[in-house]
Length: 117
Length: 115
Image (tube, rainbow over all chains, first blue to last red):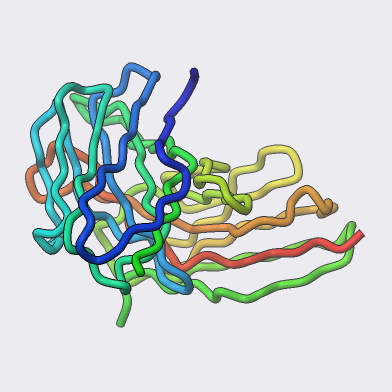
């Protein structure tokens, strides 16, 4: 496997279900991200992890719970979601520039298409 | 006013046409300017990035940044059907803690190049 992988690619769940999205990066990066992509809206940054520490939480509802056990793996735990949470969830990784000079190029996975019924 | 404005299109052009895609922004703290391409059912992939005002060319693609006008463009010459995708502009600034760059994306422009 190369790059950034995400599983599952498609997920349909009811509002009372609990499910998890998984992301794995094979690039040796130290930062990982969750984004939400909805139709006709810009990508919305949800969470950022840098060296396994959460450095950003963009006012995301608590029904989304991230977990980063190591710098290669990122999870998004979902529970009691709403139909408006249906979207493409993208994971990305980057190598953060320690002393500046990094463009913060982010490499994206293929996404998980989530449908909440 | 949104931080990054991008016309979502859709934009449909014949093969061989020159395509111009644009974004405007309001945040003077943006440092890097990027264009991502996203094919259907795929994640975005970085196409080009620029730091300073001016032009940067890569094959059929030219990225242009005008910081004084807060305006960026992507030009595609001799467009091909394989260029059909959604093009997302993105701009980065250091986050408040200084530990990462934070990307702000435009909505994306859906481009179709017809053979």
